[in-house]
View 1 (cartoon, rainbow, N blue to C red):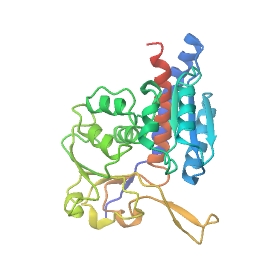
View 2: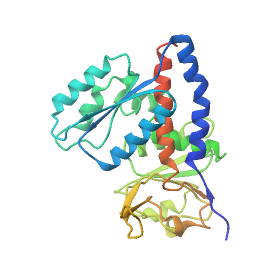
View 3: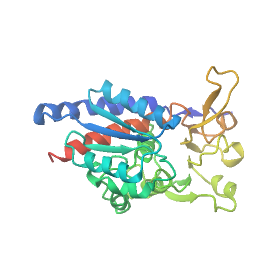
View 4: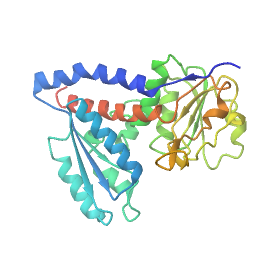
Length: 295
């Protein structure tokens, strides 16, 4: 049985942070500028709290400015939009992040559209998604950008290969398919998107040289979904009960990690794979937003 290589996002993210140090120093030395991010959380979502806490820790460790604006669950859409307008005009913040999901009474699209594209470091604004589609990106969504960086770091070239993306969200699936199919280095794959309307999922996934799983279904993908040597990028972060854990749960991906060992050529672990790269790319996008003011 062949060994499955582990694609550590921690290793890649450390390289990203090291590469950003000179750029951050240049902003400080040449412009007295400190890249700043405002993160807005509405309500109390445990997963959102973990993400923002990790983000805040990383920004602090790199001597960057980060502020979290916490709003109660009952905050109206009008109040949230007012907060965003204030942040849009605040020069301290080069990037704005509104943590998703939002409470059901708030229209997510309206909120994303309210962030000016120049501060949309998540890359979700229609203008930024359009620029990505046209091959002229301003900000690339953090998770897909991080995945592409993982592939490049480990010298996994998608060119000429069949890449299958499971999921069609604007956060991961759609931008991922665009990035994988662009005519450039470490891209240029033949790309297929699968989703809830796909009739025979296994018939497609077993053809994949690269499989990106972003379904949000715990451990759904096992050895029956892949062929030997498939490179698996597991985007899922799911909590499942675990009586042996003090917390009462453990984190797993959309892939059954144990089931694909020895069959998959390589795989990102959960945790420690895509997650660290999402935060690293958020930091990088925020630095890019600050740099754009002085270009």
